[in-house]
Image (cartoon, rainbow over the protein chains, first blue to last red):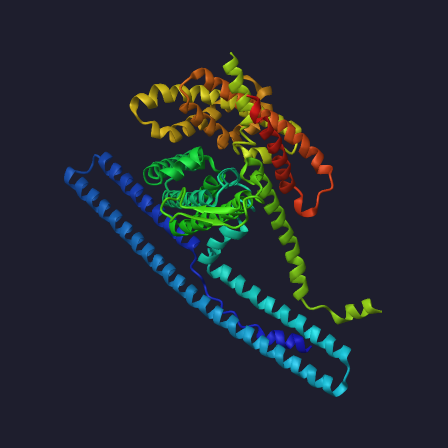
Length: 398
Length: 190
C-alpha cells in the first residue's frame, strides 16, 4: 500500500499543451502553396472566359482582368500572412519546448534528490530497527529490498525524462556523444573492421601511423562537410557516384599538398594515400551520417571517426615498432618533429617479424582478441558491483 | 617470355597482393567464410581488374599524359572503374545470365575494392605494356590462390575449438599472419 502511495505522490502532473510540431509546419506550407496555385488557376480561367466573351467591349474586358488579377494578389497576400503566423506559432512552440525541457530537467533533479533522501531515511530506519531487534538477516533483507526499490524508482524517473525529451527534442544528439561514438563504440578499425587495409599496411612505425591517421582525419572531415552542405540538392539515385567524386577530389588535393609540404611522408605512404578514396569508412560516413545531418554535426562525426582511426593506428603502430625494432623513431617521416630515437628494448631481443607484413596481421588479430576478452570480462566486473539478494546467498550456504 | 613469367610469379606469390600488399582485406575477410563465395569473388576480382587495367592504361598514356594532368589519375580511374563495373553488371545480365548469377553479387562490391584502384595506379607507373599485363594477371591469380586457401582454412576453423575471445576475425587474422610468413619465404625464388 505504502509503495503505491509514494509512487502516486512522486508522479508529477504532466501539463498537456498543444504542440505545434514540424510536421504541422510542413502541412501549413503545403496548404499555402496549394492555395496560391488555386488562386492562379482561378484567375487564368476568369481571364480566358472574359477574353472569349464577345458581348463585352475591350475596355470592360480590361477592367475585369485587372480586377481578377488584384483579387488573386489579395488571396496570395492572405495566404502568406496566414503562413507567417503559422511560422510564428511554430517558433513560439519551439521556445516553449525548450522551457519545458528545462523544467523537466529540474524536475528530474529534484525527484532524484527526493528519492535519494527517502532511501537514506529508510536505511536509517532499518538500522534503528536492527539495533532494537538485533536480527541481522532481517536487516540485510530489508536493506536489499529498499535498495532494489530505490534503483527501480530511479530507473523509472530517468525513463520518464527520456520519454519526455524524445517528445520535445526528437533530434537529441549531444556533441560529446557524437565524438566519443567514433572513438569507442564505432571504432573504424577494431569494431566495424572497415579500415583494416591502411591499419595493416602503414603501421610499421608510429610516425607513419600518426601521419596516415591525421591525413585520414582531415579527409573525413572535409568530405563530411561538403556532403552535408549539398545534401539537400543531391538527387537520391546518383548520390553514391557524387560522394565518390567528392572524396576522390579531396584525396587528390590532399595528395598534392602532401607532396609539396611533407614529401617524406608522402613517399612512405605511397599508394595508400590515393586508396583512401575507396576506403569504406569515408564513403560509409558520407552515406550514413553526413547526408542526413547538418554540417556542424557531420564535422564532429568526422572528427570522432578520424580520432578513433588515428588512435587505433597509433596503438597498432606503437606495438609493432616497439616489439619489432625495440625503439621508437621520430622526425624521420614527419619532418616537422624534432629528430629523436627512444630505445626501450635492446635490439637483440626485438623480434624483427613484427615489422614484416606477417607481424601486422598478428598484432591486429591479438589486439582484437584482447578487446573481445575485455568486453566479455566487463559484464563480470559490473556484476561484482550489484548487490546480491541475501535470501539467495542464505539458501546457497545451507 | 622468361621475363613475363618472372613478373607473373613475383606478383602472384612473393609479393602477393593480399598478404604482402595488404590490399583487398575487406573482401578477403568478408567473403572467405565459404569456398563457393570465395571462388565467385576472386573470379569477379580477376575479371574486373584485368578489364579495368586494360582500359585505364591507354587512358593514362594517351589522354592524361599528353594533357599533363596525371595528378587527376585517382579521380579518372575511380570513375572508369565505377562505370565499368556498372556496365559489366548490365552486360553480363543481358548476355550471360549464368555468369551474372555467379558474379553479380560480387560485382557490386568491387567498385570500392582497393585492390582494383591500386592495380590501375601501379600499372600507370609502368612504361612497358607487356609487364603491365604480366603483373595484372599475376595479381589476380595471387588473389585467387590466397582466397581459395584461406576459405578452406576458415571452413575448418569453424569446427575447431578456439578460445572464446579469438573466435571469428581474430583467429582468422592470426592464420593470415602464418600464411604471410609462409609466402614471405618465397621471396627468393625469382
